[in-house]
Length: 407
Image (tube, rainbow, N blue to C red; front, top):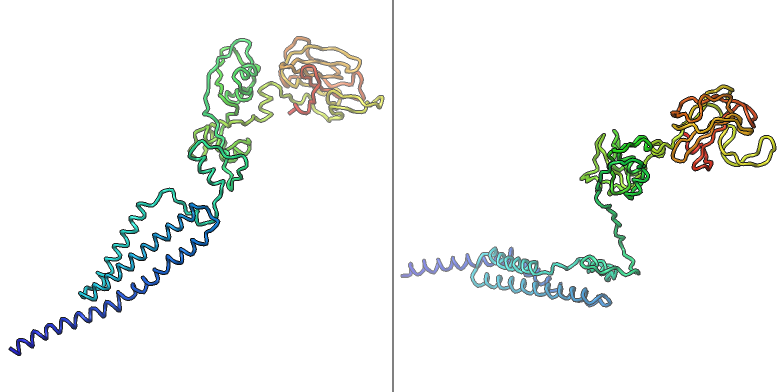
């Protein structure tokens, strides 16, 4: 009996010793550090609560948000403390391995945080911790969700960009009728003449024939053909247009452009040389020589008084060829006391050109001439101080500065 009783008592003693060792191991490795951390956590809500008390002067929503956060943190800390303490007590009573006592509170804490995230308001903003509220921000947020307009006194901290995307480009087709002009067609459709000229590649607006089909865009601008080395930013910058407008009008997904690609540049203008050439208002130099007198007021070489000079004087030797500065019809060939031998050509569009002080003329009245065709020779006739050509351009019978039109 003793032997058997001693064996049983020994087994119970061994079990008790093993349980005691497990308890000591749990206390040293697992349970005591969490308990110490739980004691520290209990201090956090009080600290945050004191911080909330210092938020006097802030708007009521911010104070309530901070207080709510403080209450939530305090509740979590309390649950953590209770869970860890309960786990510790369970281990002391049953000798349960310490890792299980840690997993249970951790699972509880994870569940609590998951519920908090699931029930948190979606419109909470982290900006509330950055400082006092900005009144303008409330106006912007309300205006974004409704039709509320911003008050005129509002000074927004960030200026909203003024995005100006033009309407979609539409093109209509027009068949030229007898008597039509580019300028009249453009006026009827509410666009500029250079828009029609550029979009249709018109070389000479005066030569359009009845039946010609013109494509007319619904907005002002020009058609541009991409050249090798061009970039979209460079094209927009050189034509002084908005790159976003160019992308929108041409439905470009990227800024990549390829040579020979055609782009419509809204609001852009043609090169002045090409524009005047197409309108027939571009003049070539009628002769070679040196400019001795310019357009405008000058001192008369004979009387010394200030008088207006309605053209430019180009000096060279007698007999130097004189060419028509632009296509047109000769309307006068004659002699004048002041201009000497002269030729007057009607170039169309209200323009006329005068060639004076000639030694000879090679055309007759009513004759049609082409730009660059020789019409006479330089001379020294009329009111002149030496061989030269007096060249004048008139628009609607009023003199204009030839140097503005000569290429």
